[in-house]
Amino acid sequence: MLKIENLHAEIDGKPILKGLTLSLNAGEIHAIMGPNGAGKSTLAYTLGGRPGYEVTGGTVDFNGADLLDMAPHERAAAGLFLGFQYPVEIPGVSNVQFLREALNAQRRGRGEPALSGAEFLRVARTQADALGLAQDMLKRAVNVGFSGGEKKRAEMVQMGIIDPRLAILDETDSGLDIDALRVVGDGINRIMRKPDKAVLLITHYQRLLDYVKPDFVHVLSAGRIVRSGGPELALELEREGYRDIAA
Ligand code: ADP
Ligand code: MG
Ligand code: MG
Image (tube, rainbow, N blue to C red; front, side, top):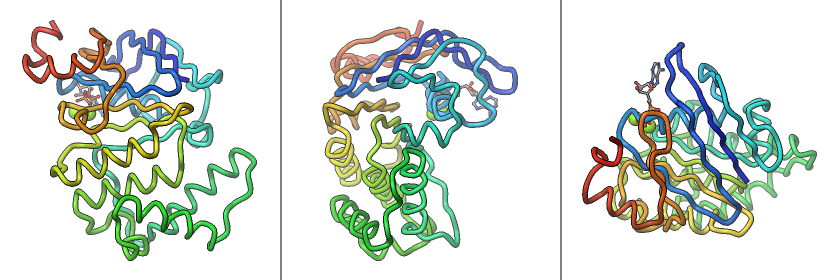
C-alpha cells in the first residue's frame, strides 16, 4: 500500500528526514516510535504534503501512484488520512458542516456523487454513536471548547466518516486518560483493522499499543528507521528507553 524509499526531507533548509525507508502492506498496522525530535511528525506532515516540508530525495508509492507528485487534497481523495497531536479549532464552522464538506470533497475527487444532508447525517450519527460522542457535539464548532478527550473522539468520528485506506496518526494518544485511550484504540481497531486498510501509528509511548496491537514496530531516530521488529520491540523500548537503540 505504501512504499517509502530513501526519503529525504527538510524544513527551512534543515535536513530532517535522512534516508527513511519503510513499507506497509494492506491489512497491517505499523507503529513508529522514537525520541523527541527524531522526525516522526515531519514524516507525517511530509506524507500529507504540508507546505514547507520539502522533499529533497527518495520516492513514495501509494497504491501504485507517486504520492509526492499529488496535491494534499489528491492524497486525501486517494484514501490518505492524517490525524494530529493537536487538532485545530475552527470557530464558526460546525462539525456537521466540516465533516460533510470533507467527505464530499473526497467523493468528488473520486468521481462519486456528494451525499445529501440527510444521507450524511445518518453516517455522522452512526459514527458519533460508535465513539460515544454526544449528538449535540456534532452541531458545535469544530473542536472549540472541546476537552482533549472530546477532540480525539471527534477526530475518530472524522476518520470513521472519511473511511480512509491509510491512516497516519501522529501521537493521537497524547494527553488522553485511560478511558479516552480505550475509546480511541477501539475506534482505530473498528475503523481501520481491515484487510484492505493500513495504519501508521506514531507514538512516543507504548500504552496505546496495549489497545491497538501493531504487526510491526519501527524506531525512528535522527531521520531514519534504525530498528524494526514485532510488538515486543515496543515493550523493550518502554523498559530500556531509546538511548541505546538510537545510538
Ligand atoms: P518528533 O515528532 O519526532 O518529535 P519533529 O518531526 O517534530 O520530531 O521534529 C524533527 C526535527 O525538526 C526537530 O529537530 C525539530 O526541531 C525540527 N523542526 C520541526 N519543525 C520545524 C520547523 N518548523 N522549523 C525548523 N525546524 C523544525
Ligand atoms: Mg515532537
Ligand atoms: Mg511529533
